[in-house]
Image 1 (cartoon, rainbow, N blue to C red):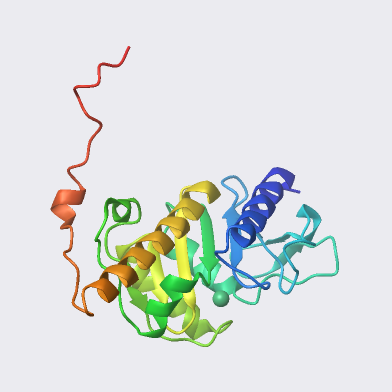
Image 2 (image 1 turned 135 degrees about the horizontal axis):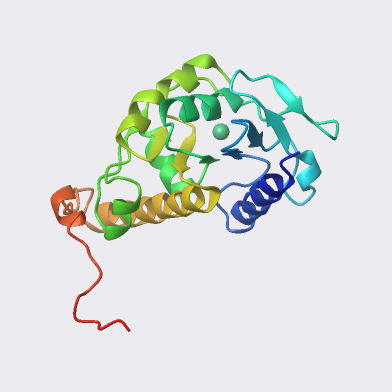
Length: 216
Ligand SMILES: [Zn+2]
């Protein structure tokens, strides 16, 4: 069931590994089906090079397994995905990575301010969810408040979660988070640890396609 969604989630999970956003079996990815409400989610402990769409698990919003083809289990961080969907009914995909620059700020419990325009795509500030042990209810509960404010949040001493209208959208945000985190790190370093200038949300929201380009 939900073969197309399984293929989409597999493609993005492999891409994230190749592009360096999450390595060594870390990170997990899911899509919520608009019709059934079921979630297709990556399995626990399968190397991305071995991952096929047959390994993708189907679960419901109460963490009941609906379908598993191979001898795999859904990611141990499943509850975090479910809570993200419960918190944000507008969201249909969740991407969780351990990308390095963003995770470094997560370790320091330091939110990432909007310093370049990419920040507008996920809502400006990247807040930090308090620490919760991976796989626990505490971790899942801790992402609720940050995700009400932003489509991206850091998870203290752990990694990053982004949400989107589809898996490409959530994945793009995960890329932007890492890019902004790297620029933030570099500007802090070049500036002797002093905070770089911030782009206010009012400015970020003003962006529009230039009217002087005359479209056909
Ligand atoms: Zn994780």
